[in-house]
Image 1: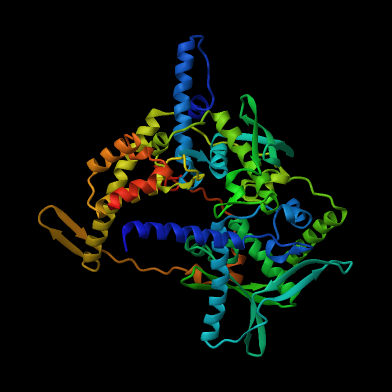
Image 2 (image 1 turned 180 degrees about the horizontal axis):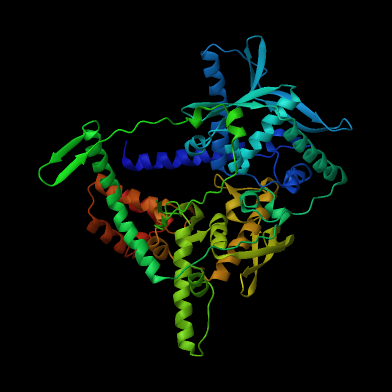
Length: 334
Length: 239
């Protein structure tokens, strides 16, 4: 096949793939709130029901991610099944009613696994490797609004299915992670109050006040074009200081040698580990010593014990990014 | 550190001189810094190649707005119906006020018409208005308003690929939007294809140059029009 034809084939594949993805992008009518979309912003919650027809559609890139997520959910279930577990009630719907008996929220559970005579709820979530690696406990879900929604979602699943506990199966498309979740009545009450409050607005066909601009929520909101939030950016400190710039330049130059130094240092030290005293020629003395002690492996402590001794701390991390531009907008960091 | 901050913010122009030339020079220097920093804060996904020109998309404008502390309020977004020789159509118009901290405000407008080729064409055919998603038009007017407001306020409009490439944003990595019509020039990909064909069919650069000049009076392959492309390909293939 000629190179020209190959180029045309590639163009055609991209075009048809985009057309296919585009054809799948659509909005769905919403008469109630969705358990999978409990947002921090009440106004957005109300828009999601009253103005679902005006919701901005996502692009082909995001549709491809959704498709991959759905496929991965199937893969997770197949892997469970291949490992000998029986998955039941896949995509079973459930409803949450308010005090007046009106259905205000609906959802589907990903499935339950039969185990020792019980059916245990699970929710499968796929994500890119960076986010996956950053999640080590349920607390890590609070780092980003879209992850935070998963916590509300699973709490509602447990509540709606009268289950005391369930678990997340997280996948980065290569490996899986399992995180147990306990039904938290306090958290459920908070979510239910939110749902009832927002439902009140829906019934009155009114909207809550705009929240104070939050770029993490507002910039990605599919209703920005009708909410029209007042955007308030504080702006970064932009410093023009030649001396500081020279120091940072010097830091960049020295950074190149750090990894080489560390590699050589590690190679030499590992060679002499366990050898008390050595001399290399007449220039270097190398001393190796062993200190024995006991440390507490805090990571292996159960969460229930660890939480009793946890105290609030404040840590500032200072990162220096060299602005190369183009690739990620941040440049290299160290 | 506080002293440094107060005296060196590049956004705040401190016109402590009456010399107009000095003031102008300062402003030019500041504008260059704003442009450089803005571009370094964005990446290839924040730009599109629109008919050969770089166009900043809303995600990029928002990043730059955050960097320089631009505040804005979209005052109004309305649907306007109109009519021309092709018939009735509508467009959305969003109007907003953009403010740089401690400085003047400007009003900016963003529009998007149902006739916008990006929305009104699919698979080469013109879509009837009923098939065009109105929300996309509304959202696009809003986004255009944000982009216009931020770029006008900071003076970073009409940037060229040369300036972008100097700051690490390569045209090759940017998504392109080309509105097909035969009087427009061929795309970068088509040009590359032509070069590949020249190699494949052993046509020298000189031979093709002579052909372009004789047949179409063209000095560069960059000026080849879409309607001329097939004829040139046929020549390269020896047809």
